[in-house]
Length: 168
Image 1 (tube, rainbow, N blue to C red):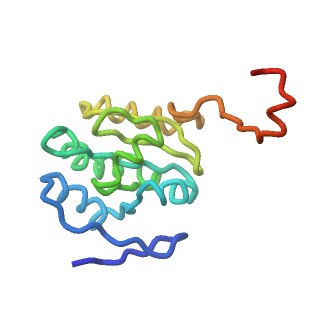
Image 2 (cartoon, helix red, strand yellow):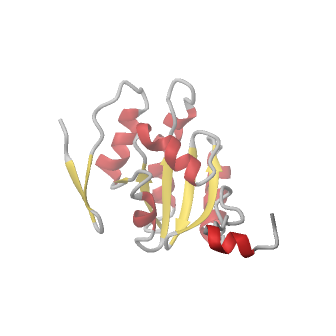
């Protein structure tokens, strides 16, 4: 069964089909019961620009990264500890690698933090409750930064401009 979910700026996004991944029910629960938005590599930037603080969960494969189930279960409690402070997005398993690559995440599970469309930080792995609360509070106070994958931009030159260059 496919359900269409409305998102404020992009119109609609199809809910992923049920998965054999054991973590899928907990991730699906975030969207169904706690208002998390479904985002992928094409919609995460637009969704994160929706205003305020945003947190995206990359749960990972439940067999390889069982902590992802724990993070999916704890995230609603973190939302309650910081009421109204951040919106949550979840990434369908099939899209997690592309989102992780875009923002330089190399561990699962990971929470990606954004503010007003700008990357802030990432928090990888499952934490003890007190550590999570302190780390989330700190992340919500950090200024935006560059994702770890963004470096010096490469500028290409057309062949006419390249012939005038003194380099190469």
